[in-house]
Length: 239
Image 1 (cartoon, helix red, strand yellow):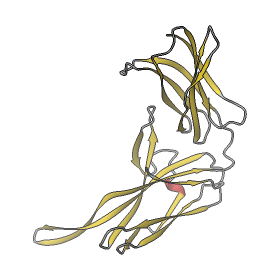
Image 2 (spheres, rainbow, N blue to C red; image 1 turned 180 degrees about the vertical axis):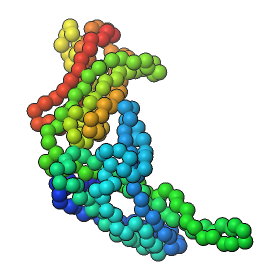
Image 3 (cartoon, rainbow, N blue to C red; image 1 turned 90 degrees about the vertical axis):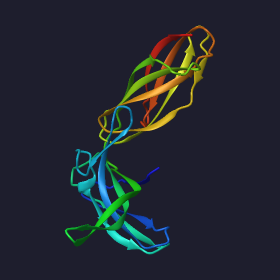
């Protein structure tokens, strides 16, 4: 999984963090650092794009030094990453630092030798910025429904989680199944995920099929870190 850097600097100020790039090879390698963006689609998958491609890109706020260097075998290089949001720019921003090996290559054209560089992916560093005064969290969960299951031992459900706030929200969501005759409740293990600003994510759940026959209330609960509020959505199902 990617290395992650979390910044929480206030607008108009700056914050610096350090990453260490190591060369575990047996020869001197050159390294090149660059920045790309990503967004999250409704299924929770990343979609990559060039730096500064969307309004939540951190690229214009971030400075990396150095961006090109050589490391001897078993050596290391410290890289400074600083983030400075403009005044009055609250909310979350994010992006990726690509740490790639740069390999010299020689091509020949018209009897002339041309030396260039080619790069190969090596390390991805996720970078996130959310100022400490970014405002209130606001998220909801709704549209709980059953979907087709390809597993005969499970019933599958989905719900939509919408983040209405301006920051990335750390979410936890789980199912509660209540027998409407006996009142017995079962709480199922929670799944954790990130919800991005002004974004709707489809979250999937499953229940076993070998549950006692009856009529049940099924609730999907969302805990998004608010001090006082849990969100929920409910349907009635039959077993």
